[in-house]
Image 1 (cartoon, one colour):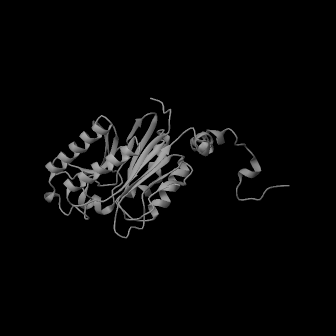
Image 2 (cartoon, one colour):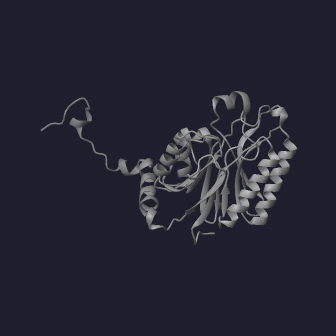
Image 3 (spheres, rainbow, N blue to C red):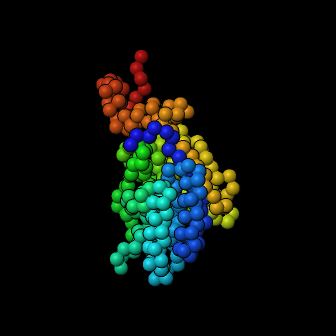
Length: 284
């Protein structure tokens, strides 16, 4: 369905504990708050439901997978009650002895699983000690807006974001378990370079150096959590008809796509025999 009105999205800066029951309660409370803000989709951090390795999960054998699955079901049921799309970070169990995926679940407004993104570019520690890497990009559409997903250290791999741009993604949902300010810098850079919106969702950590927020396709903040470390939601809007983003969406985005293909340059190149030797100055 085409987007007739601006698409409102809530970005969470949520507290994450070792107790998945407590995480589930916090998530559902924030989902309800997002709905009260008039949001169509709510976006949570990496590990928001399950907890993240080393910080909350110290050993896979200690994880109560049944409780985690029950909380996923409860979140899905709440999404259906609210009519709210929910994107949430959670460990995804594989059959032993395979290690889990570090994932983002996408739950539809009907409470159904619309798909899952598995982190591809795992860190050295994740790869060697904790997780199985994923293999595929993931996109999904809601109300005429195309979304993509990425997790934490993947912000350091611009090729992933460029690929999502080629896939027609208009808003990236970037979840991290981090308070590194470089995530803000790179998220804004990816938004500006690819002319898509970016939702940056992180946990509420004590002494946080980073805050959650929503970035426009020009690379500037549209909404930002003003209180670092606090558990809260911010909301922003995707408005493809806004004059504010006319250059970013209608001019820069298609032109850069053409530029990356190389076609607009190939037809303008010329043969100039003296200058084909790049070890010489020009002639007069």
